[in-house]
Amino acid sequence: MSQGGETTKSEELKVNSEKYKFGEFDRIQRYKQISEKLKKALNTEGWDGRWYKRAFMDDANVLGSLQNEECRIDGISQSWATISNAGDNDKKYISMESLENHLVDKENGLIKLLDPPFEKSKLEPGYIKSYIPGTRENGGQYTHGAIWAIIAEAMLGFGDKAVELFRMINPIEHSKTREAAQKYKVEPYVVVADIYSHENLAGRGGWSWYTGSSSWMLIAGIQYILGLKIEKGILKINPCISSSWKEYSITYKYGDSIYNIKVENTNNKNMGIDKFISDGQEIKDKQIKLIDDGKTHSILIIM
Image (cartoon, rainbow, N blue to C red; front, side, top):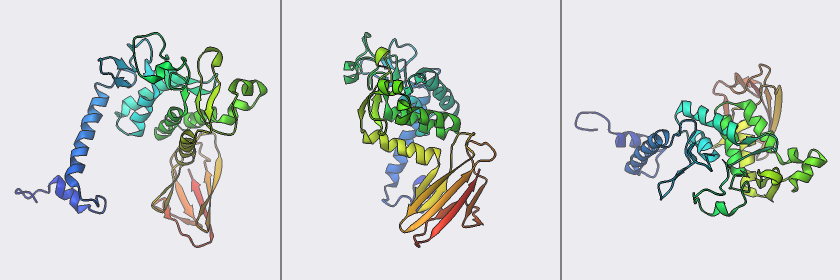
């Protein structure tokens, strides 16, 4: 206790020693203060009116600003303002709308990393400028970034948009017709690192079998759209889906046990669950502790 009888921040942290088991309370406090400063800077100096800037360079030039001839907008800044929860609430919605307007190319089925690509300006962002405009990080779809945009849409509750964008970048969607397959030119059953966006190369996939992107795509689909999350043996279901979906099911194997999960969406919702029923019993906490008992369990989620 402090001399005035008030609990200090450090003492409050010590009370929750299970959460902060390494005991570095001062470091936690310092990092929280730094985090708040960064958050404030992001939403003031980093805000460009309709979206977040991408970077401040050593020569004082800015990337990802409306003032730029090239790289006026970059998707990573918009997505991560939401994913990190650092963006101001109103700015998150505005910036994601800008991402949709400037970076989503529905005709070619891709989400660009930035636009316009680097080509003739004096800006020197590094190695990505050596790529042909619209290729890989230089204005193409860099699939990590595309999936982060989908996750951000889901976190904001835009289930229709999240599902539409997920379907749009799904490799199989690029090979549904002979014409599409001839444009895409890579395997329709694996995730690519990038899709070109520029002129006659638009829609062509590159660097397939890319595990980093495939891992993120799995996370986006399972955790953020279907809403299945397992944390410390606790199962939660928090979907963010298309309002047109009436139901879906998941079979989850936990050790020798099977959990058959059915989600019903009769009210045409994007998110939010009304009831969580496990083995016929409604669970008020809307989550359960997984049990490896070798049995088959049923979970019914009513949205």
